[in-house]
Length: 122
Image 1 (cartoon, helix red, strand yellow):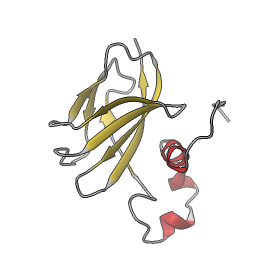
Image 2: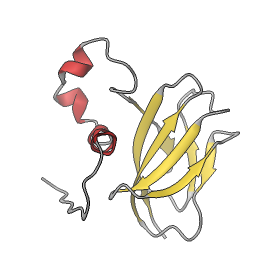
Image 3: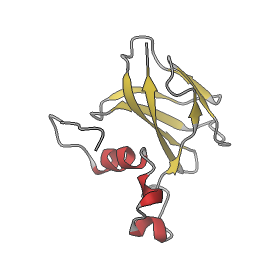
């Protein structure tokens, strides 16, 4: 184990799933969801972006039509830090965002979900 987190609240099932999927463990330890034809909501796809770590500007490298998509950025406690509906494949986190680890979740117009973990440095 290389990370340990303590929460002062109950985290949601979605937050647990997003955090779990941000580590790519599903490829090493497939779950029944991954072996079946599960919906994208239960089995989010990996969101690829660069640079990581970043100073705030994030470029999405997946070939995804982001127009009309919803992007949320949560800290590791599940608190929403930033939400946007992007017009391009890049987002700029607010300069007031402290350094740390964040979970990015992108939901497309057709309800496909992509998640990834980003490290923000100052």
